[in-house]
Image (tube, rainbow, N blue to C red; front, side):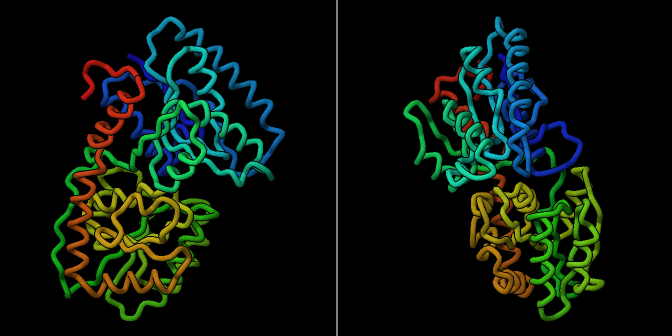
Length: 373
């Protein structure tokens, strides 16, 4: 049984690593775990970081051509559903609704996000297309409470909404270290992992630099994993930290990145405007407690107070104080790390997500392969 997959923001085979690409790939594996044959139906993406109304007619025409092509290819085949990952005003799904309607199959969106404030203004065109797609879906799978709240408010009568919290595939991470002995003979190893891009990522790096620059004492180091077009600006933001910072560059391989997680004691990343931040899940899977800003859906990727300390968005003194607290209190740091590993292992694995998705599909009348759990 086939499932047609779409990713209008960033394709799962995109060459540049990101959390968006990671989640798209995870959803492909999730559907395959249920027993579907999954096909990336189209490589057409609609993402535009800046508004440009003139681009829509050509994109709409390309989308219509893709729908015609796919209907001709799959019109006689048994298709379980059209499944789209991540739809919002900067990346509406131009193919999924029309394709599902033409094939007469259910249309599903994972991580749909509604933003009524974008109904007017420069992003109005993208907003209208995103709204049309979300309204057409029979099943919505929000990852965060904030997304769920807005979807509930604007829910159409035929829609079902099931929470599908952020998850990872532990099989991608060989031999994660989860037991960390407390040592007073070496510095506490802080770690951050993030692309070096303009906008929110650069803002996060600047907040991190400002917070750590004010830490008292020298009993810590910071490893930075990441690279990108604003590396010089990131290095400048962290320059006040001196030799305690070690820039590791971009690390794409899971084994090498896992070694960085396993060698660290505490994950620190403000996460400005993160949707939820898959990197927090990855850190916790390796037994790392986290310090983050309480942006977006980050609270849905951690257990606040148990596996992570969340501080008010943009509050640099509060972020600094939380990091200092966990540097000083090794016992609490270790206990939170152990709780983090348990949390991910029990609730945020591919297997747990597959159970949730199968329940959602059954409740929504979407055909499951006989092999599905």
